[in-house]
Amino acid sequence: MAGRVEGKVALVTGGASGIGRATALTFAREGARLVIADMNEEGGQQTVHMITEKGGEAIFLQVDVTSTSAVEAMLSKTVETYGRLDCAHNNAGIAGGGRALTAEYPEEWWHQVIAVNLTGVWLCMKYEIPQMLSQGGGTIVNTASTAGLIGSRGISAYVASKHGVVGLTKTAALEYAQQGIRVNCVCPGYIQTPMTERAMSDPALQAQITARPMGRVGASEEVAEAVVWLCSAAASFVTGHTMTVDGGYVAQ
Image (cartoon, rainbow, N blue to C red; front, side):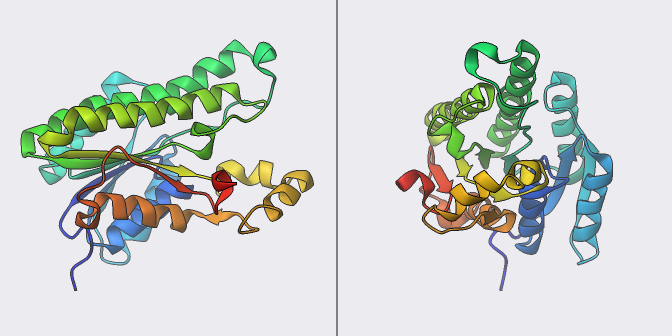
């Protein structure tokens, strides 16, 4: 039986670990050829190895998604290698330097988080969309967060960036809906990833998580399944959608 994205070319930013790695592995399992992009070369190469040792096809590109020239080069290399781009998971993101009230939030943290989490997603779309238009279509899934749907104390930049990703996703979906490009986003809740390890070690946070509807954190693979479904033909009438993968958290 053919995979859900058999023969497709998929690009995953932030693919060296966590949700990005899980999504890349799921794309590969479902028949896609992969471009793994990340600043972390060691982790990115490990993801490539995990794919190729199972007979898949993947390359790694070291990319800073805040750099226009780097993102443009990433798309050029993708097309040079595989001839097209069918699926893009714009997932690269950072948590920021720490927690602080809005009026006390360091300007340096603000600019860094917005640059990676929001401008980085926009830059990727800026170069992905023309390529997809030139070939007659494609699918894009951006990683937002439940913090893109509700507020959260102490992380104003992260919340603002993820709300921005949700709005950017909806806008692009409307703009290109009749040109063969679907644009959606996933909003993960608390997911066990390297980025969340420090926060997850907080006993108070653990207690909060246990009290939530499903009583546990999510796995990266659970988000990956949603991403790949959104990129598949099974989701052919889905665009502009904000899919929460949060164990029911925002339903409360």
